[in-house]
Figure (cartoon, rainbow, N blue to C red):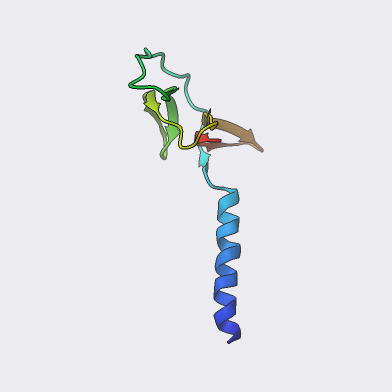
Length: 97
Protein backbone atom coordinates (compact mmCIF):
# COMPACT_ATOMS: atom_id res chain seq x y z
CA UNK A 1 0.00 0.00 0.00
CA UNK A 2 2.82 2.41 0.85
CA UNK A 3 4.42 1.76 -2.52
CA UNK A 4 1.18 2.65 -4.32
CA UNK A 5 1.19 6.07 -2.60
CA UNK A 6 4.91 6.64 -3.07
CA UNK A 7 4.89 6.44 -6.89
CA UNK A 8 2.31 9.26 -7.46
CA UNK A 9 4.01 11.43 -4.83
CA UNK A 10 7.37 10.97 -6.56
CA UNK A 11 5.81 11.82 -9.93
CA UNK A 12 4.37 15.09 -8.57
CA UNK A 13 7.73 16.19 -7.12
CA UNK A 14 9.57 15.17 -10.29
CA UNK A 15 7.21 17.12 -12.55
CA UNK A 16 7.25 20.16 -10.27
CA UNK A 17 11.05 20.22 -10.52
CA UNK A 18 10.85 20.09 -14.32
CA UNK A 19 8.40 23.00 -14.44
CA UNK A 20 10.93 25.32 -12.80
CA UNK A 21 13.38 24.86 -15.67
CA UNK A 22 10.88 24.63 -18.54
CA UNK A 23 12.03 26.64 -21.52
CA UNK A 24 15.67 27.02 -20.34
CA UNK A 25 18.43 25.41 -22.37
CA UNK A 26 22.17 25.26 -21.96
CA UNK A 27 23.65 27.14 -24.87
CA UNK A 28 27.07 27.75 -26.38
CA UNK A 29 28.16 31.28 -27.19
CA UNK A 30 25.72 34.21 -27.19
CA UNK A 31 23.36 34.42 -30.18
CA UNK A 32 24.37 36.48 -33.22
CA UNK A 33 22.73 39.85 -33.85
CA UNK A 34 19.13 39.59 -35.10
CA UNK A 35 18.36 39.62 -38.81
CA UNK A 36 16.44 42.69 -39.99
CA UNK A 37 13.21 41.84 -41.78
CA UNK A 38 10.00 43.38 -43.04
CA UNK A 39 6.70 43.26 -41.15
CA UNK A 40 3.66 42.84 -43.38
CA UNK A 41 0.01 43.42 -42.60
CA UNK A 42 -1.78 41.41 -39.92
CA UNK A 43 -3.91 38.59 -41.34
CA UNK A 44 -6.82 39.71 -39.19
CA UNK A 45 -7.85 41.52 -36.01
CA UNK A 46 -6.26 40.39 -32.76
CA UNK A 47 -2.99 39.15 -34.27
CA UNK A 48 0.38 40.11 -32.74
CA UNK A 49 3.71 40.26 -34.57
CA UNK A 50 6.38 37.98 -33.08
CA UNK A 51 9.82 39.29 -34.10
CA UNK A 52 12.26 36.86 -35.67
CA UNK A 53 14.71 35.31 -33.22
CA UNK A 54 17.57 32.88 -32.89
CA UNK A 55 16.44 29.63 -31.24
CA UNK A 56 18.91 27.26 -29.62
CA UNK A 57 18.75 23.78 -31.24
CA UNK A 58 22.24 22.55 -30.50
CA UNK A 59 23.30 25.69 -32.35
CA UNK A 60 21.50 28.97 -33.00
CA UNK A 61 18.96 28.75 -35.82
CA UNK A 62 17.16 31.83 -37.17
CA UNK A 63 13.36 31.64 -36.91
CA UNK A 64 11.71 34.32 -39.06
CA UNK A 65 9.06 36.62 -37.58
CA UNK A 66 5.41 35.68 -37.86
CA UNK A 67 1.89 36.77 -36.94
CA UNK A 68 0.25 34.89 -34.06
CA UNK A 69 -2.94 35.16 -32.10
CA UNK A 70 -2.47 35.32 -28.29
CA UNK A 71 -3.83 32.22 -26.51
CA UNK A 72 -5.83 34.32 -24.01
CA UNK A 73 -6.97 37.93 -23.77
CA UNK A 74 -4.47 40.28 -22.06
CA UNK A 75 -1.47 38.02 -22.69
CA UNK A 76 1.70 39.38 -24.21
CA UNK A 77 4.69 37.81 -25.93
CA UNK A 78 7.96 37.77 -24.00
CA UNK A 79 10.87 37.26 -26.43
CA UNK A 80 13.56 34.66 -25.82
CA UNK A 81 16.76 35.75 -24.16
CA UNK A 82 20.32 34.47 -23.60
CA UNK A 83 21.69 34.64 -20.05
CA UNK A 84 25.34 34.57 -18.98
CA UNK A 85 26.07 32.98 -15.61
CA UNK A 86 29.38 31.70 -14.21
CA UNK A 87 31.08 31.42 -17.59
CA UNK A 88 28.19 29.65 -19.33
CA UNK A 89 25.31 30.80 -21.48
CA UNK A 90 21.77 29.54 -21.15
CA UNK A 91 18.83 30.44 -23.31
CA UNK A 92 15.17 30.89 -22.43
CA UNK A 93 12.70 30.52 -25.27
CA UNK A 94 10.06 33.15 -25.93
CA UNK A 95 6.68 32.53 -24.32
CA UNK A 96 3.25 34.05 -23.71
CA UNK A 97 2.70 35.70 -20.33
